[in-house]
Image 1 (tube, one colour):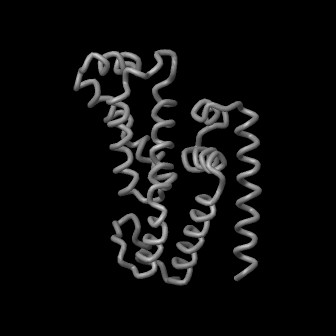
Image 2 (cartoon, rainbow, N blue to C red):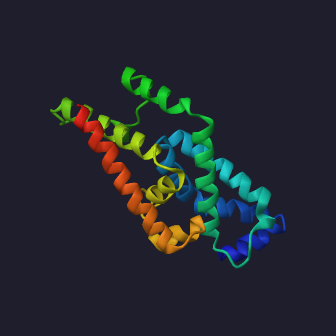
Image 3 (tube, rainbow, N blue to C red):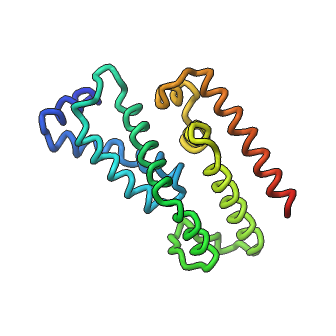
Length: 191
């Protein structure tokens, strides 16, 4: 079934079509959300909200639009709303990470042969600093940067998702990179 066929079937209350849409796009939506939230559990929760939104607003879907663009827009908006509504989230995560109380999966565990615990700690700190710096960017800069760097989307795809011109995306990316450079330079200069 094509995306358009799925949407038509969902509009006709076909539950199997909705299930297929979720199965086809769940990992994509989780990855988009995780690019903003940097927390897989939250990303999975927000992905569920995205699919609920799709189900509830399927009649608003424009037939000439791409399903992937619609999914990206909803996922980005839900992720940003989650961040905005949970400002304390970052602080609590940092406290959990420092105290070591966050739950680790096998994929999160360092290599058994890793003989440099300082390097592991330093890499984790750098990752947290980068994520914090990205989260302090202006909203549109953050969206463009995250979609490009975390989701590997082209500027053209980003312009479709954000509903802005290609030159606007180029400008947003340029400003995001410059702002990140300044933020990271100032942070490391203080160390």
